[in-house]
Image 1: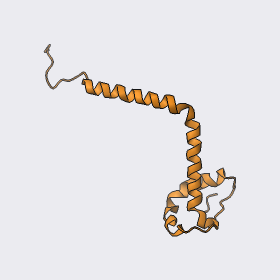
Image 2: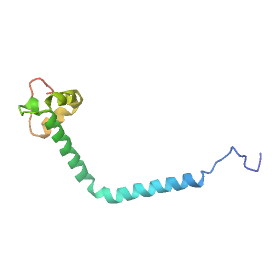
Image 3: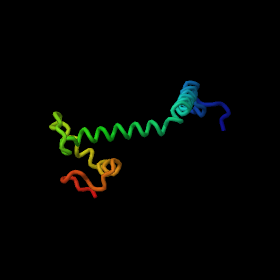
Image 4: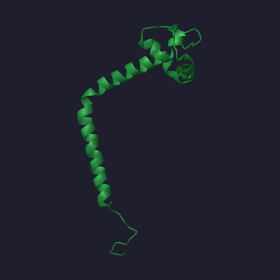
Length: 103
């Protein structure tokens, strides 16, 4: 067995790699320290934004005049998976749209 390290045998990570891993761990820790207590608030705000986006896209189908309805109709297929959870969250037991039967 050779006692000297060969050039291709690099078992220890380089200094820059170790520093970048430590820096990443440090920034992750800072992010957790500052954002951790507000995670529920951020999730609620994101949910409200998503609900508003669904309402804007579905406005024409719900009877609210939408000047961009022609363009937002292209987004409908992408929103069908979230539609059921959305109408349950806003308090409707059944789908408010006749052409979308999810329940």
